Length: 135
Image (cartoon, rainbow, N blue to C red; front, top):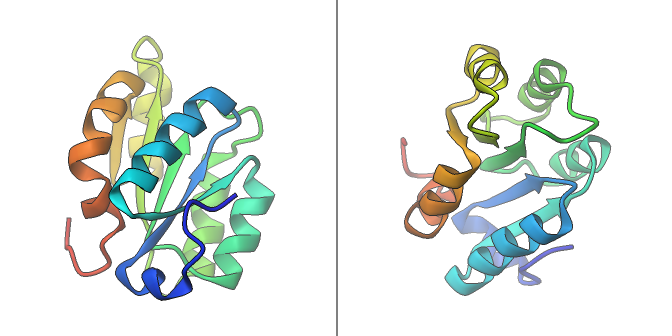
């Protein structure tokens, strides 16, 4: 599912959200739609990788509690598929500090508790997706 059907907007950057939570994904996609951002929703890692092969994303947003997520392997595959590594924003439960820390060690650029991710979405989503922003 894409919040943007106009490929020319991909020039500005686009992202892929990996999340298997329908309600949470809807919230993120609504924010993207309101901001005019191109964001695809992948419900599983295989779909994310298929889309990344077709059109390398400038950013990926990863739910660390996705039931099929093998984070280190996914990041390796993304880096091999994409000419420029996508900016990786990972989010998870604030009470699971070990999982958040392991995402940092795996190479995610930004790791946030879910509540801080939600708070950061509106002011930072365009920045995360912007291929010209050094972040």
